[in-house]
Image 1: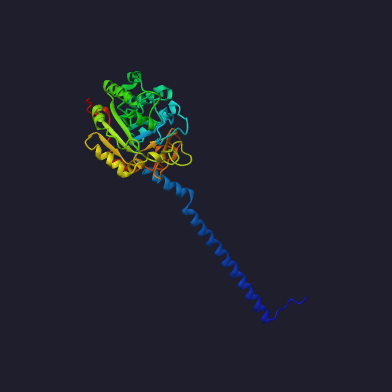
Image 2: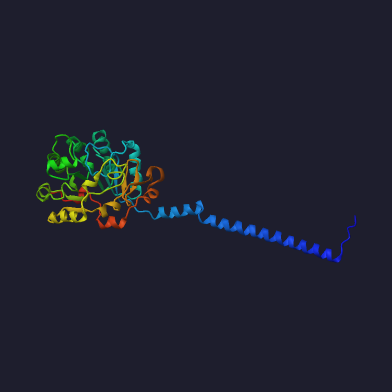
Length: 353
């Protein structure tokens, strides 16, 4: 075979070789550029960077000065507007509940409020009493309080645990028994109002500050409670506007249908105006209620109520307080606006009856 090339053929071969070399070079450069660019894009959303951002949020998390712990959802009443209904029967074991309360205290909690459901229902109030004693005696919290419907409270509970309790708030929406029947705040033939007076006297005897909570709704919005509130002399009368929470008292999955209880802002204001001379009255509109409370559910998860429902965080028992609280929806400015920064204890109050 003749392998000799003409000058023209040699030049063509050399040109093709140069083109091939340049193609390989640019292909290699282009591949590396694509790789570096993709890597840079990936780095902006990398788990490491995401974790750093989350850690920054956790570091800036709100201090849980005041916490409302709804350790049970079970209740013996059937209030039609209830916005924390018996969707589960779960209650944490006592030692796990104490562990969570210790975590909260270590994170800055100064006030704990126990609620439900009905907090005196579980173990006939013994579980609650042990938590109250632990918070005051072991954790030395300045303020320990309870919200109850009052139906399950007995004097022997005060004898055993009264020294560890600062404030007891009893829910009472009306001083008319027929209205309480319509609302569902009743148990059989027992008088809710008569029981209220009995508990008020026990609070006086055992030096526990006595509060009243009322939810204003279509059935009591025209009532005038001035005379009886003045007679009972609570240190505070919290007046709440009936609130809808999807999945609790509104919506397809709700256990209550509270739409028929809802009043307008104007109706709520008219009720407040009618009771403007009651010095202990503290109003709580829907706006204030949605995001100015730190609510902890039965699993010790913070509940975000900003979107009109209760979206839970992870449990503080699993991820700690600082991480969980970033998902609470808590508005510290609103909390301060409603006077929540001040931590009440019975030592601060003039318990005059």
